[in-house]
Image (cartoon, rainbow, N blue to C red; front, side, top):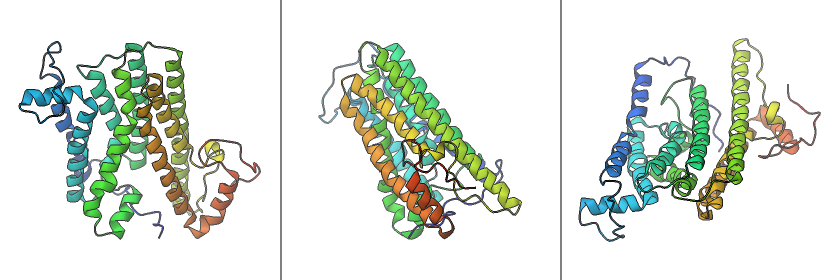
Length: 345
């Protein structure tokens, strides 16, 4: 059964931004990364930078020093340990207390920055400074864009709603309380750690900077611009519909203008372009296997695309409009519509 549009999306206008719940969740947002930040600081300062011991191997550590050396020599494994403890377990426990998975949404926009920063600041990293700065700049731009879109969409409220897919699972299954650990959080670990793997290759490589780096940077920025345009046009569409409702006018049932005329999911396309450009650094630096994260993310987004379109078709008043829209408009890659004369009003 396709969930109704209001599942997980309550009207938040009555919730004051300075209310107790909102401020408490905002404080929670700042507190939850502290365990990983403190652990990283401890690890990076445990040895003098010139006296880090050799890799002790994967045998059971016999001392704290051996454990610290092991974690330092295997930064990807360390990132996974921190993610599992700080996000999977802590966020899951908080979701049990709050009956909401909302916390993972704002942190989707922040975790990649934390992971890339971990690789950049690592005592054993040897980044090419220009490539490092450019790659971190595009990631910061991506994070700022997506965080702004989250705050705009949530109207600066925190924890009042969760992703509609998780809200529907919570409503339809009494077992969601335990399997959300796997369905929500471990799944995010695979995607987010996977997507940021190219930053390990960037910051642990001595390869010379080249014109290919500029091309990848340009493609990443193009992806950010496309996603920003798409999300801004969608936000304007939603706000105009709210105004129409307040005036007693009928809503527009379909957004098929602007960049949405050329793609049914231009925001998804922009995201994919960004992450595949980032993945290109792995290929450029001789580590093509780090592109696996982008491939997994694309597969997941393909499934989300199907779910979203089924959701759109579930409404009788919108079904025919959306079916026509599907026939004339590209799924992801922006392209000229098959019938340029058709447009909703």
